[in-house]
Image 1 (cartoon, rainbow, N blue to C red):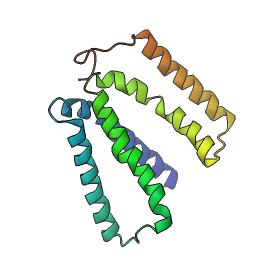
Image 2 (cartoon, rainbow, N blue to C red):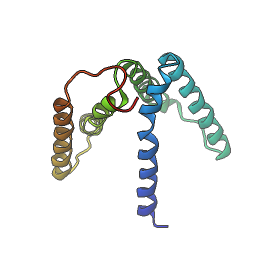
Image 3 (spheres, rainbow, N blue to C red):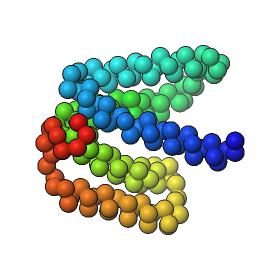
Image 4 (cartoon, rainbow, N blue to C red):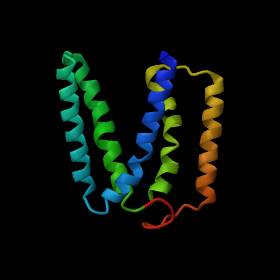
Length: 153
């Protein structure tokens, strides 16, 4: 299989897996505390990560990388799942997906600010048009959401 085809397929699998995470979290927060869910997710991810590092005989990160890894982990492992779980106690997963759709533009903006990335103008055109469509849809549906009903869980 060509590298580009494998990349597209891996991307598709990632999107499919991620698309189920918010409805699953919405169901889970009806039974479990979001802090417990965040801790469980982080623990499972850490155990799998350690196992894969050992299996593939990868070296441990250098001391210079630890602070960067800690900052990323704070956002990706704790912040996003915990804040999403807290939010999903009060809104539907369908409403939350609309707001999550704005994350790629935010990520690109921080990539420019923090990483000196320089995406092409066509990227910005489509990012802004896509984000405007998402925001328009959200506004057309109203800004309030009932905790149960109106969409996916």
